[in-house]
Structure formats: structure tokens, C-alpha cells
Image (tube, rainbow, N blue to C red):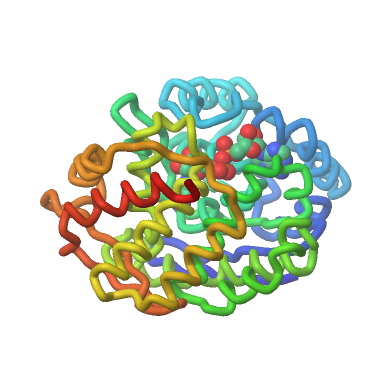
Length: 364
Ligand SMILES: NC(=O)c1ccc[n+]([C@@H]2O[C@H](COP(=O)([O-])OP(=O)(O)OC[C@H]3O[C@@H](n4cnc5c(N)ncnc54)[C@H](O)[C@@H]3O)[C@@H](O)[C@H]2O)c1
Ligand SMILES: [Zn+2]
């Protein structure tokens, strides 16, 4: 078992990684979940069907009971209304302040579950059991929770660090191909911002990773989690260093919004965002040509990305009003080398418009 510590001012916890961990989850959690409290699993139908039984059995073997609560699948259920319904279900099932919530699913279940746990009876612990690659390497770690408003994504939320994060790479075997690849783009991000070994592993082991080879995948996941854990430990509330995790996300988020969250999966938008950031970096003289080429080539080898047709000016407008933009000036995370980035807030708007046009013409 690989154990990676996360130490933030509000809580210290571990990310446990092991193939088959879901089957022994109850044992792994034995010392963390108080004997007198009850456990509730929150999940969504695609994961419930395939994996909730495994988790349930592991608790049964350990002589403990869990209740399973199911929420509707997908981004559209990341709402306050859904959160309220789930809270009602918890109350009806007899949950109290000693209860623990286990969020078993992708980033949606993780974000809603952690938000719910953070406010239920003024806060109960949450254990993250991420089942998408994106959730395993990113959203389950770091304590950000949230739901969407009509006005935008993740506009309501809290910080609520989990009690523990259990990562079982085996659960990825049932993940749809596109979701899986989408997570790989997020993994690539960690290679560019911090760890060149992740980037090289993805360059040399593409076929094994696409086949979801157990050992290689486990290594990739662990390496990515080490980066996320380290960054979050140093900057829990995203006042400084944590911003580097937004590499590829400045333009990525704007592309997702501009295409109404229908055309691109999040990781695919990040794929386009990483290409755009590298091109912007090259134009600004921040990113060397060899680095730019390597990044673009690697994104494309894990593609294809759905083609996009968007107006650069509209993207620029969205960037100026993004919730992460301070004073109307968007910040960009630009690579200086593979494994190193710089935060730049002096990117001329016309360059953004031009690069968005360029990625729109990619591959044609
Ligand atoms: N809190 C954070 O720091 C943070 C960071 C990044 C993203 N997010 C959030 O994460 C969300 C996206 O998460 P996601 O990409 O995991 O999407 P998701 O949770 O919607 O999962 C994608 C799909 O895969 C299904 N699925 C999950 N695991 C499966 C499995 N093992 N087998 C078969 N199907 C499975 C899900 O039910 C869903 O249909 C967004 O809402 C985003 O805002 C949060
Ligand atoms: Zn992301």
C-alpha cells in the first residue's frame, strides 16, 4: 500500500493507494471511523451498480453496516437542491453528528458529498473514495467542495478536508474510455507543472496506460497525487502556489463554458488549454520551442480531442469575468520547462484571441 500524507492547517490525513483497496476499505478505515458512529455511502447509479456492493461487503466482513444513498448522475445534479434532498435522506436514515459520509464516485459525487458533509449538522467527516481518474488524481484531494449555480460552476462551496482518501486503481476498469482519457490530460498537467518524470512516463508508456495496465497506472496515479498533496499542503486555500494547478485551466474553463459544458469533458478542455498555454508561452518567450512541441505532441498522442469552434474574443471576455481573475486581468500559468511553470498576468488579450483561433484550426 502506498501512503501519501496531506498536511494542511485545518487537517492532516493520508491518501491510501492500492489495487483492490475497495475490498479491504473497512479494514483500512477501522481506526479512523469511530465505532459508535454510523457510515453512509453516497454514490451515483453507474458506480453503485458496479462498485457499491464491493464496499458494502468489505464493511459487512468487518462486522459493520453501511447505508447507501444514491444521487442522480452527472454535473446537472451538482446543485443546492440536490444537496438538500440528500441531507433529508440522511436525517431519515438516522444520521447524526457522529456519522461519517463516504463519497464513492467521480468528482461530482466527491464535490457534493464533501459539501454535504461540511454543512450537515454543522459538519461531519467525509472519506473520499474516488472512482474516476480525474477524481483520483485531483478532485478528491485538497478539500475543495462545491455545487453549481445557474450563473456558473462551483459558485457555492466550502473547504472541508477529508478524513482519508482511498484510491483503488482497479475501479477504473469500468470507466468509459472518454472519461478515462480525460483524466489522463489532468495527469499530464502535473508533469508540466512539477514533475518531469510524470511527463516522461506518459511519453514512454502511452500504450500501457491506454490499456490501463495496473502497475503503470498505479505509478502514474501515485506520482500525480504526490504533486497535488504537496501543493495543497503548502497552500490550502489557493492564495499562492496552489494556483499552478490551474495550468491549462484558464482557457480550458472558458472553452467548457463557451461550449455550454456539452462539447468537451473537463479533461479535454484542459488538453486544449495546455496547448493554448504552451503556444502563448512560446509567443511570450517564456516557453522554449522544444518544450512547446513536446507538450502539444503529448496532448495529441492521448487524443483526439473533440474539435472546437469558438470565438477568441468571447473567450477573452469570459476570462476577464472568471471568478479566479483579479481586477479583470487573467493570470496564465505558462511552462518555462517540463516540470516548471511561471504565473504570468501580462498576456496581451490579442495574443489570447489569436491562440484560441489557432487551436480552433488544429488538425484541419
Ligand atoms: N474539488 C476539486 O478540487 C475539483 C477539482 C477538479 C474537478 N472537480 C469537479 O469534478 C467534477 C468532474 O468529475 P469527474 O470528471 O470525475 O466526473 P463525474 O463525477 O461526472 O464522473 C464521470 C462519469 O463517470 C461515471 N463513473 C465514475 N466512476 C466510474 C467507474 N469507476 N466506472 C464507471 N463509471 C464511472 C460517473 O457516474 C459519471 O457518469 C466537476 O464537477 C468538477 O467541478 C473538483
Ligand atoms: Zn481540472
